[in-house]
Length: 372
Ligand code: XIL
Image (cartoon, rainbow, N blue to C red):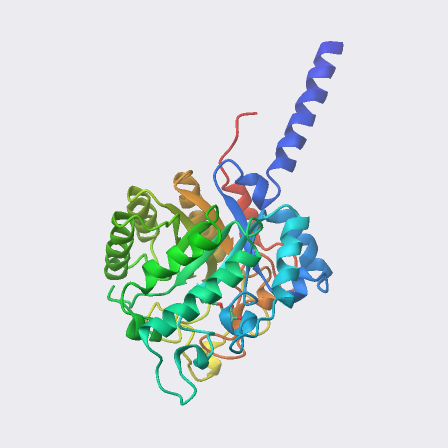
């Protein structure tokens, strides 16, 4: 009788412990990959208490939504401003998180002066390479040993897999990518270095990226991983398409990570699946159907979509090393303002009141079961 009672008590405790283990994103997936979020200053300076609590409980890796972009840290020649970035990195260290740097070389959120001389003409290849080296060495060097992984080059490819004709490409040529990785490695030989892009689920763009990464690897360029951003819709990409980059890039011997996950539930503003930040579409009430709340059926469909995605990432346990959401709650997501301004979007796992959504529960439920 006493044995039976003990058995019952121990069983209940085991179930409770299991439930507790499974109740946060980082714990539920800890045998497979890190789970993270991109943060804005209100979140890492403690101004937003509710979100602060979510971040500390749920995530073991963080990315900076904007504070490490060129225009923020290096707005004018020779003038650096690390005030916000320092706070971001301190927050990550205090909470023992895997800290990501985003991003060193991109065509967006980089001031025009970087590419111009004092007369406004394009600078030479050598001048631009010098500017790039100086910026990378200063920024990566400052956070050496504290930031663990950098998005070195962001969005270098067009949708058809050809090289984007960014000012970096036009002035330096294709080897700007290789140079950026080498400069970053020189500044911190231990830091992980990533190529990051969107729509790598589409065949043409993925093919271009595979060629690019293969060439870099063949030349001995220090690249650790590929980030697939993951700005998804309800009906794109299919699960099969999601698996494409995971399988193909890991075959090249690089880590694969999902770096900017969110799911757009609103009607698509354009036919294209791009996440190009320069896209702007005029406001139209038809494009903003849920200003007062998400209908239950859409909420449940979103939950299923999220669970299917996390289930797929977990199926590729070990190949996928990190899944980072681009934001914490629906309130602060960039998808409320892109590509159409002032919409009410619902792309994340926590709602506007910082409460977990059905999608959160579905993701936890889908986590791999651990032997008890
Ligand atoms: C976005 C930020 O979320 C916005 O706040 C900012 O206004 C524009 O950039 N791909 C990227 C991210 O690599 O840096 C972008 O972040 C979203 C698309």
